[in-house]
Image (tube, rainbow, N blue to C red; front, side, top):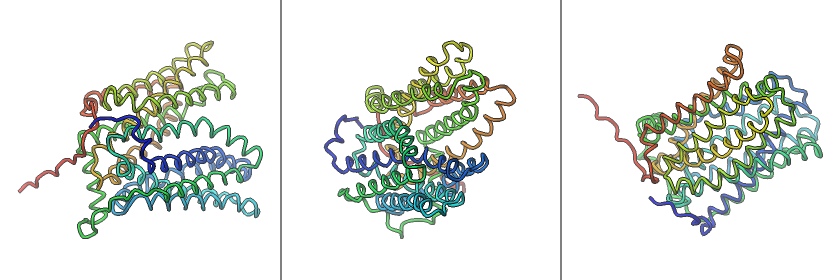
Length: 424
């Protein structure tokens, strides 16, 4: 299947989806800053309470990730996305309202964080399943690249916007911006006119548990889906391991001031923007398999440079800016290409389960990565722990290169591995 650049400009329904997501992602970046600041500045939350607030937002992926995929495969995906956006808009709107009435509490904030995360699970799984039905599969890489571009732009603009809104309006009121952004996204989705294919008739479907098992079976036995899922799991494990000690390494090992830390991390923004723009072209020029390996290699260069900067303290800041620039380029290239490959090889009837299974398994390792990073940081030191995280990307590159994924020079057609014959 050949990649055709520029075709999405002539698909108005995708442009509506893209516009809504661009607004929504910008609002979400505001919430990433404003929600924890609401807990800290308005409710005087303690460190353990902040940890609980962060944890509950990821908890839905572990609790309902697998059944959500099977359930979504039974229904049309666009209505699920619309109602998930509406739910998130209403939930977030309760925070500034409660603050205005003087009744905002930490349990309220934690409850909203959990429910917004729950709605996000259904939206993300539904969107990954809906996109291949909205655009031609030959444009999947370009479509995912456009969405990644919006995320990159939101990351660049969202953080300063959040700071200005919190400063001018207070943190709870700033959350109204994200509530409004979800409402805009819902309206854009409702504006789409392309008919969505109907799911399989209920009479032809097995039970929910059987469908979840089918999703697991397909992912674990497929020569392309399995390596992609394992690559995402390894990258998440390595990333959370390094993130657990990164700020300690910056402040204690390198002695960086907060302004320098901000400058270093800001280098990811332009890199991410470049990676989002380049992803469709790189995948089209070299093929999705080599593009994935190249993306992982770029990230490896970046994550290896981070602990290396500890040996050159005088040049630590420029080295770190190069490191996070490389990570910024590699991340969207990796995410766009892996998502496009997964969507391309998965039949429409299995898109929800395959996406949910891959995401659930990848997310399940993130808490363990954080715990392992903390233990290793105490045991072998911060710099050595970061090198261990970088070694995870060496394993990832080798596994991709030796698998069927590394040999993919074009987006393949949907395939499902046949179930093994029973032994009699």
